[in-house]
Length: 133
Image 1: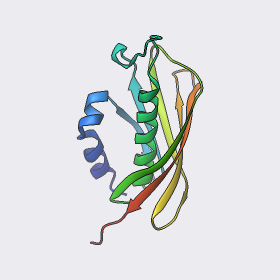
Image 2: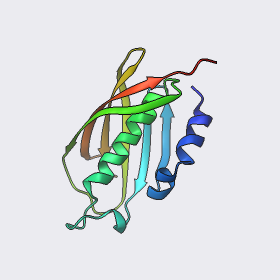
Image 3: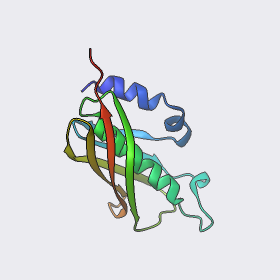
């Protein structure tokens, strides 16, 4: 796993910079990201929009799959269960690889508030590619 290369790729992406994601922890098959809540994330109820939840969950799962040493990761399918809203603080997304084979990886992720309460749960299937060297 080339952690430095992965961090450069993700932290250098326009989306990562736009939304303000931060790396909390990365290990082989697992990643934790954090995101400070800002008002521009709010929906009409003045809580973080579900699209922000889904984006962070997708990114944490993709990053978890990539941490296995794959060069390219693409979301094939994703399921999100929204459990609780949040209006302030920092939210954390933790992704963990459940299963892998040569071409796909199954990952789950949880989204949590600062107190550790689960805000959302997600699973996703990702196509993975390792380039020949």
